Image 1 (cartoon, one colour):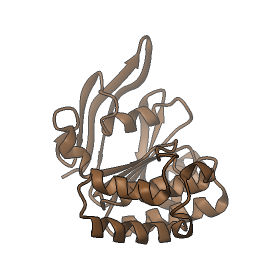
Image 2 (cartoon, helix red, strand yellow):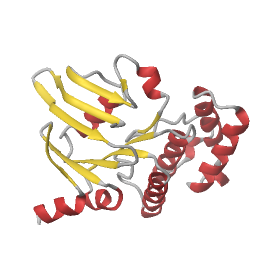
Image 3 (cartoon, one colour):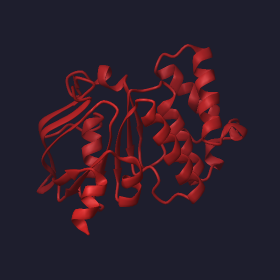
Image 4 (cartoon, rainbow, N blue to C red):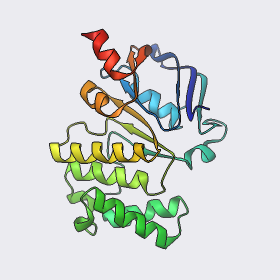
Length: 226
């Protein structure tokens, strides 16, 4: 059974067709990358799967739930790392982590244990009481990854998670994603970086002008392109 699925999904804004009949399925434990240039429809695809925007036509399901009909059930089982930080900048990293724990109904002690472990893993435990507004872009991105993981989701969505980051933050994020996938987490990743997709993904779907034009293992796609 697919954990994530899109069936003939389209989305337009006025005369602009952003996605055009996209169909794909992601299997349990798979890391799937959506690769394409800016404006190809990558972010829109992610937003439809996560329930941020509704498709004009077609269906999107996550963990067996139609994201439009049962959004709460679907959202309880996944985490999201958007391209732009969604952490509360007037709160500390620790306060942001505790807030996420409360939103997902975690017992306080479990939330504190996971927050401590995750902030340690992303190198922010020493800065946990500092307000996020003082964080660098890389620190903010590492924090929102930790926030997305605090409830131990079955599925993780990431939209350009390493865009514009320093080498240290990029390597830390990629390493954590590989570890989580090895532990069984299913990952849906958008990127325009083929090398990043090659390092992380079991399969890569290439999207152009709102259509999936190829989907295969990254090494096979690289051979076809070369």
